[in-house]
Length: 296
Image (cartoon, rainbow, N blue to C red; front, side):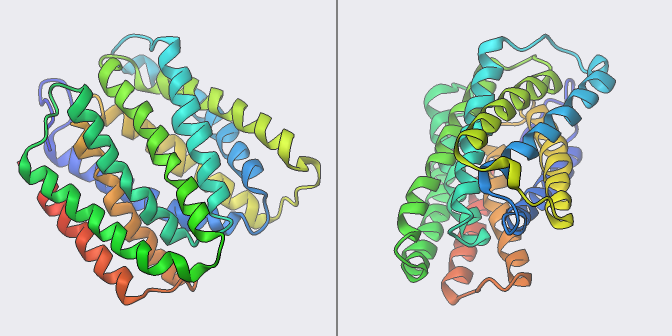
């Protein structure tokens, strides 16, 4: 893990912020599934990002002047809004109507490998060493172990849903790599504000086209889950995430996706999701992969 002390946060600050991101994002998977008890998937995702976009607009107006840098180019925030927010989260919300939250989080764990490979191919400063490849391979092996054993037990819709879900980290890799490649020096708050607003607009259009939005039951649980996911799970986390990406290597940041599934798995136990021996073994491989991948 590296940060430029002359320009960015100290190493302890980076570690603390990444830990915070892991805890919050690890909790979002089970909160999404809880909210989907009352809300259709695209309406839930659209509402989350409408509220998040409004919250980010307030944050950007309040704190944006303190952040150095230039305005992000339109093509960058349009791509980020399309890939990382609209497409990625539409897929996540849809598949969480079929798969348990912990399994969705663990399947999404292919993101570090995709991000690392993209960084290796397109970011000259992020060449991978054999130790990194070993860590990523071990982590991927853990994911394969989990889902070869667990997915077939969930019914005929589980495997197609899992295949669809893999598109979510794929499109997110595109957005993240472009931000790392072309977003150096841009204002992260402005980037997130614009991208979230565009993503929210796309998700609203999808919800209106496919769901009966007018008859959605806005229960207290639905309101609470959307509020948490919007403010903590989106405004705070993505603001911190893309700010950190200005100073920290992309493959290091992508390791967050190794830890969040473990948090999601533990929280899933509280909601009655099964914890099998294969889940434990897969999680052990993932943690072992992290230990290797973050070595200097």
